[in-house]
Length: 470
Image: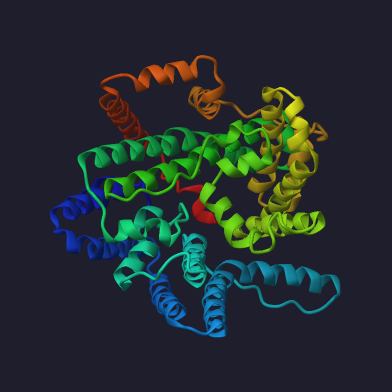
């Protein structure tokens, strides 16, 4: 069940919120756990047992780590929990990829291949595993305490707004809210407005841009050409931002409507002047996780330069692999790791001598090129797509027609992404924030966007969120 589906918008969400607010406070958490299980089971009934069983085991392991007085026992328990979760992730997400890659190597040595394995990927497994590992590590480090009840832990892992695609939440950031949270009309209205804005970003912009992205990325090398390649790349750059940030807005908004306050996951990433800044603004919960639970434990900035650069490459190799079991994601991760190394070696100092506009433009162009590799279905496609981008393709291809809706989506998308650098925007925003009826205006705009989104949903085929693939 997805946030942009009619079933969720007109059935699940209204019934859930009506029941939630009518229930006495002690019953709300158990009700949310049962609702979240039903939400997940609707789309993944065959995997819900795996999620529930592994969650119970992690809760028991976390309690055992906290009660244990022996350091060796704590470490053994911690690694048991980490390896158990990584084992689940590896089996469902990477076994087929590694078997296929191994078969390529075996074929080159004229050896018999291993039978191919096709294993269905449970939605949201990468996010669930990261949160479960975070919980165990924080208990081991005494950053946080175990959940006071299994209901609280289940709610932390399964809370449906962030269950399928984040944001990745640390238990100690939400522990107090799981126990006691205030419900107010202001929170509900603010959350509803945020949800409706996220829905509009997904349905009106991301889904519209997908209408041109998918056909362009299906073109062969002889059909692509320079123009199509750049149109497809610009549209995908906007699509993935509005699709994923739209989901994050919807998740944060739904949680806010129930009294939870999740941390932000995006902060205008395309205005970044370096890759370092980009990862402070893009998928913030993931980049924070990588920094705190992988990069810093490997030594962070406290080691030699060579070791630090190696750690960065390793972290972003794993970041790319986390996004998907494909060599295109691995190359994309290493690509970002290399640019982060360039930042540390010279770019962060050198850019201080250059105009902000130039720094932003250069960074944005290289980020877009990375998205081309990310979106490609194979390394072969990535190769000929990049060739077309740089004008190295021998064919100009057949030009893809852009209708008015797509053109408007591109213009509006770029304006939203770069709104903070548009002359007069800050003054207009300050004026709006001083308006006495700001809340009412914002809700009215969101309701108009809701009507437009419903109309679009009714007229077009259903489109899932991009990050559900990862």
